[in-house]
Length: 119
Image 1 (cartoon, rainbow, N blue to C red):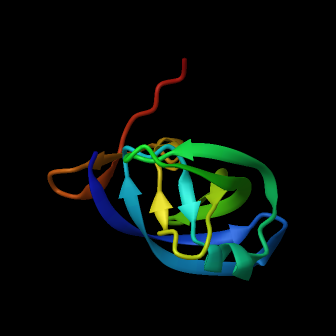
Image 2 (image 1 turned 90 degrees about the horizontal axis):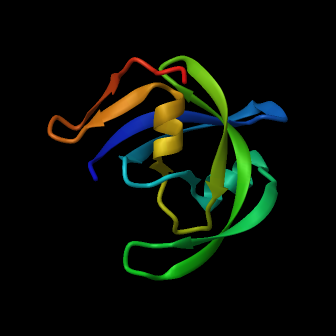
């Protein structure tokens, strides 16, 4: 697992005028992107369902899953995200990385574009 930070612009897919720009930890070992509670509230994001997650220490937590539009370097995609609670850190996970065609270089702590396979 490698970590670094990137700036993402997040918006509500149903209310695109509402936007938040925030620094996110990039965690290639996490599956989903996590939006902290303050962003969820500001953008009025709505949950689709509740999911259980196991954390690295074995703790089990429940969080809502919803949708958000994520903009990275001028490219925007609607993505499934974890609607975090207050105190949760902003985190960009592997699903978002792969959807944008990015790979993390943990040694240089940089994101690189990669060729995608169409299988």
